[in-house]
Length: 466
Image (cartoon, rainbow, N blue to C red; front, side, top):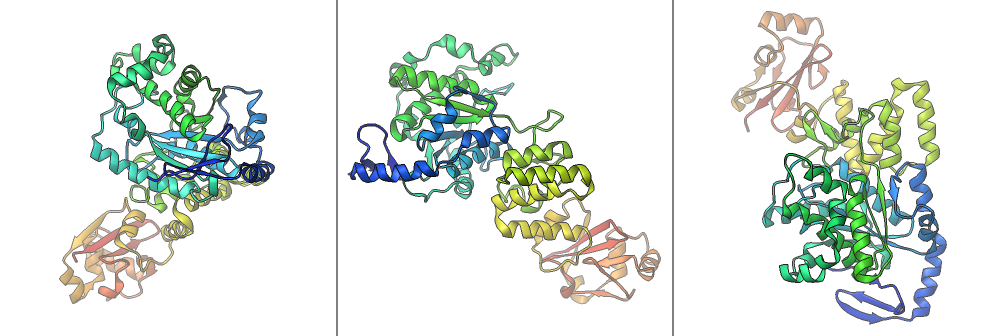
């Protein structure tokens, strides 16, 4: 991917690098622009503090002032273990977004090299190693999500997207040991919690995973040299890797760099957020539909929703505190959950994603169903039983009573007839008035499917072959 315009710090302030070329500009002009930008910097440290997003930092006393002195370059890394990030990855990605909105330049690093090894942090066993083709596919999917959340067209402080394979892949084994490994004391690695816990476990740790920390530490050194990066952020489980990078930058380049971690995204009962009975909640709509994504956040427990609003949304403090107060008085209205679900769904899937999700929710509460796709209908009624029938029966006109029996909503035509007569049968959430109703192509709710309902909650899908 092309390297975006970047300023290098130091005495050559007027030099700009673009796609490997060096262009000279008037330093006075750059300094003037920098002065304007400095006046627009927001107090990101205070923002992170009130939101509860500061878990650890390397210089608690000085970082707040340091971040207000001038725009800084900050990075977070993401391992491409799948072709989409998940809810747990949303927190550090939103941290990068907050830094950019506060006036700093974010770097999103995709671990094409480190992803081939796997981070031992927080893992009880070694990950399966991915091949090159799988990694490339995963990296492409993750890039699309980062482009949604970070601004890559904001001038010289635009977000930058990098893949650490681009520099790690150039090393020979001997070169890496000679140039990097000699600066990394083994006793430092052994002292990190992520390594200690695995050494003490039955699974142990392989030399491959043991090397992960060294590769990630060198990322910090490389980004400092090439992009002037001075701050790394990540989840609290990354503290050992971050401090290792800080130490390596000091040993190799004599540079002072910093680190900040945020809490992990967990529920009040200690479990990881972003897991459901059906699996992981992903950021990609191909893996988790906007409706499923919206519903996950709408169903967050009262004990967790305020934290989620602070950690993951850009809702201002006053709004969140108002929602907190309203939730105590009228928890049944779920105003906090509605705001959380709307804010995050719009952020990831746009206004159209919110509209689809809310329409799907209305359908489950009885709104009429029409003009949906098979995929959308399948997502809304994922747990609803169904029956598949030949298309020819629909073309000929299928009797409603037959459909009720074959779908399992009635045991016999007599029972189906009584249900219709009593007003308890619905077709695509519209009440059926006639027991002689015939079902044809015009009754389809999507390309191949119609929805039958008996009573308030008993649904069945009737699908017809194309």
